Amino acid sequence: MALFTTIGTQLKGEKSQYLIQREVARGGMGAIYQAEDIEHQRTVAIKEACLDPVACEGRRDQIRERLLHEMEVLMPLKHPNIPEIYDQFSSQNNEYLVMEFIEGETLMGIQQRTLSKDLLLEESRVLGWAIQALDALSYLHEQAKPIIHRDVKPENLILAHDGRIVLVDFGLMKQVEQHLTESGPLIRAVGTVEYAPPEQYVENSGSTDARTDIYSLAATIYYLLAGRLPPRSLDRMLPMSLQVTKRLPSLRKVNPTVSRRTEQIIFKAMEIDPDARYQSARRMREAICPRRRFISLPF
Image 1: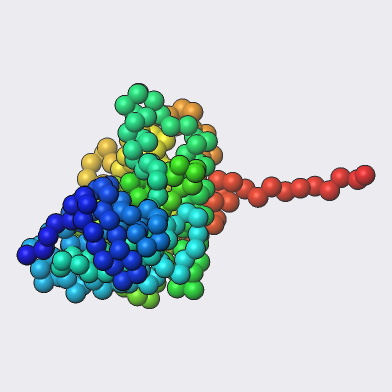
Image 2 (image 1 turned 90 degrees about the vertical axis):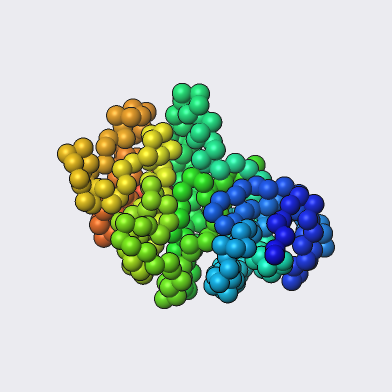
């Protein structure tokens, strides 16, 4: 039987040895730990993918394959808004992925703290975060084989202490033309339902592309500015009552400080039809922060 990872556990990886310092997060069958990389003398984050050995039984090869795929795809990437991947290994019948540790707070944590004070986040602050997230998505989507994150949400965006927004948790990532997906019934989304566009509510989500991440980021921005979640995309696509329609409820009625232009950008990015959204993260970024046009003046 596997031993559970605890504080003080020392793990031997392929490229170093790691000393577990604390648990950062836990959910489902996995957990994230802060650890010391003993050989390289740095702090790292370690994702444990088989926290429950019984639940992982019979799925270990699939889980290992996914971690290896995640490492192989992400390790060559170098971008300030994406964590570096360092190592992947098996130990005590558990599977581990070692990556850059981002010291900071998730946007969900910041939002919850703000709401607890009966306040809403400032538009300029949220849009600054969105621009950085769009830079990360542009970089991923414009790879030779585009990388689609498929789970952009406030919990997966960290505001680092140095001011960077870092996109984390690529567990549902896919590369276009390489479909490592989970099958499920129509009513089950691949990703987090509150931020998932309708194309993720399919049996085989091969239809997801860059516009999927654009929708999810826009839903994240909506939540951060409104302090409440937008209607789920499936409810908007298949309205069951007069209270739910394809149109999103006005963001400016909830938060009057939000500009009409920002509301329009968010609503366009959250269109039910992917063809009606921004067709790239770069286009959405330019809508939020247009390129400045300079006019030459005579001397």
